[in-house]
Image 1 (cartoon, helix red, strand yellow):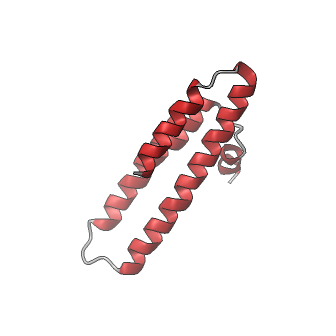
Image 2: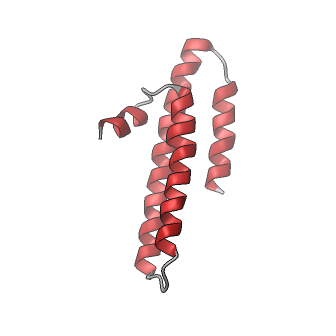
Length: 94
């Protein structure tokens, strides 16, 4: 639980927030979802729970990334990582 809270608070480095927690987390969640959805028939409640968990997971990823980006912005003054993360988050949502 400490790892998840550290990410949520923006304590991880920006590369880790993006690549490990963001990109890697998305891939792992999609793999898990595909494993669950390959079995037929699929209950409405299973799909509803997966959508809700995915939304919460995406929220956790986004908040953690932007807090890490704010910390990096304070340290370096560069807006490039923040803009790149915004674009990646928009792509992840769609």
